[in-house]
Image (tube, rainbow, N blue to C red):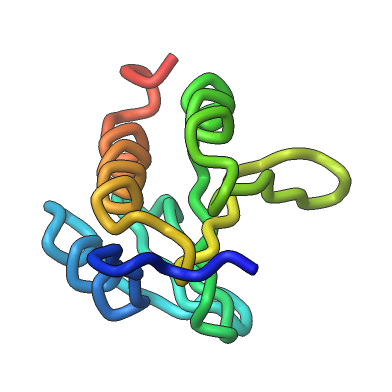
Length: 117
């Protein structure tokens, strides 16, 4: 069983929300039965109703690096059999890493489409 050791922190949805909403141009809006965070009308994080996970829509290269570094709390997010992002298990996650990943995906999505190519 994966239990937190003394001194380790756990990440909560409230912390993700606070961090995401502090980023420039971000708003929270419903997305089907999920909550979502958007910038420039682009979704970069969704929050399933379970309150234990978030989904990040990170570029493939960054996604693969993150998966290799943090397999204990990251997994591939599939949609229609295709990998579209990362699923983060918040109770197992390191808050600093989660915040860095949220910031990275926000930075990517906040650029105009021509700058992302």
